[in-house]
Length: 72
Image (cartoon, rainbow, N blue to C red; front, side, top):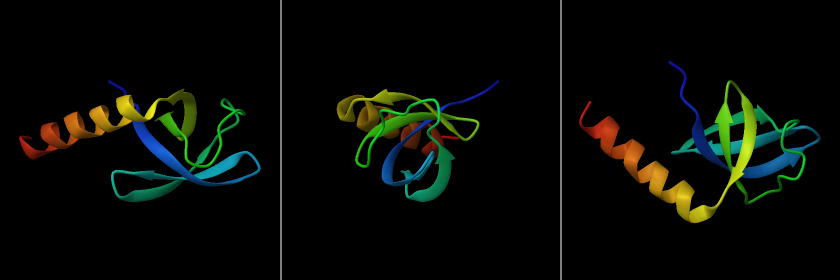
């Protein structure tokens, strides 16, 4: 099973972005989401941003993931 996570873009350098995912920073490709900009939330799968996500949905998803982790 595969899982996509949501992260917030901190900075962009060409087709690469630094994102923060629940306190962890990681470089990802934004080649599939060229409209993405710093401050946007994106869904990330296999090191690629696959679509933009609105802030409300991103925060709700992070809340649910934290609950799952807490009870795992």
